[in-house]
Length: 562
Image (cartoon, rainbow, N blue to C red; front, side, top):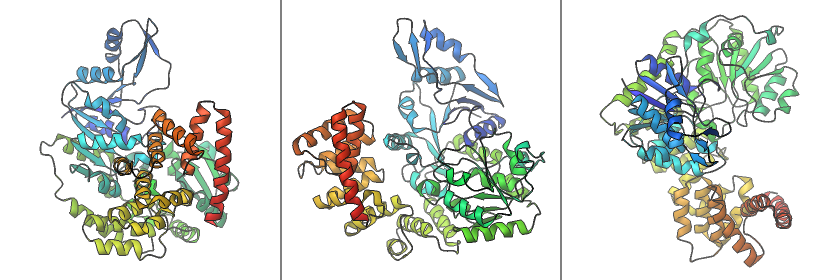
């Protein structure tokens, strides 16, 4: 048994319960001492006269619930003299010392600098639950994650695609998908008051409503099924006017975790209508397991992680979505998959992770290729047309050294558009198919103007731009370094790189140099970044001038896209 510190991305009590909290509780149930550090709270600086005494008092007064020891993050304090003192590293070290921590399970790559400065060597494990670069406006997280993957003793991932990507950087990598507490969702609950008047069959969704939720699909399906009620339970993070305009769609908002099972208990079928974009490809949806535990069939868009799952029907358009919902409703009997659910319970997942982090032998993953072949078999088992899966197959075949088959998947598919575009461009770059780079970069229409500008300078310049756009930051810096002598316009791409990494002074210096010398910049992205910096510096005249330049580019883009 170990003394485990969980460096979480979510608050143990205040956030919707998900993987981090569930695993912490179950690891404690297995006999480990589990200490859970909540992410940075939103409060003013704490005033203290003695920093060390302050740390000693706080470290001796944790909150304990569900068998888990919990602390709030303390990142800064205000000393009596008015100075602000950075305390994050000292606070984590105090927790480690107090509880004799010997293993750390980390969810956020930003902790990497702190982990590098620990007094004693401690086994660090990275539980990677998402492609985090898709959630962050800055690309700095990419560099943090690169470091974390290198320093971690082991990596845990939740999906096949995350395994493919992260196991490249750390061979001691295992796939541990999400799960469920089956008994919680198997119980019977009274119908919640806010849906008690709904008598129609209920098609339900539980989870966040964000930019990956396919509102257009949802609206079309709801309009085709006026005899049904569509209940959407969860926090709204985006404009939902489209959904509000449909009379049989009910937006119920955020619910406490302990309230959620009662709503799911009164669904007749569960749905997961997600867009098939890069972010979702890497997702292993907890809600599927929770629907199944409640005895529901699931209708979803063809997410890779749901292929082959029991009572899960995958489809990509409104007509077939409707057909699958009606088929699911045709037999109202609740499904019963108790053995499968127990195999996919949080306690079983915790056992897998406990075994992994307790092993003295580092698994060098000689079986990586076997895993990739298994993934390929899963994707091949999906019989309907899915351009996205063709891209994922191409990536797997590439990894397995079957290059001709990989190229066939990517190039001989007429329906392929911008599905997993990052992966498509990455493969083009790895194969050095420079003659196809413009074509593939132009699949994202918002880049079409900038692609034209960089390609005018030469394929090397477009390559540097492509690396940055697929978030291969180290490769991008390497590419621009080789172009310094060829054209000073590479300074704009260097500026864009620094802007992405929030090194704004470095970016501004290069934008100003080029603009003062040439009275222009090369790319729309450069102009937009420069405009943000001008506005933040309250340079109103410059900002107005840059806005006019951007307006001219917008007109040119309209012609290019036409």
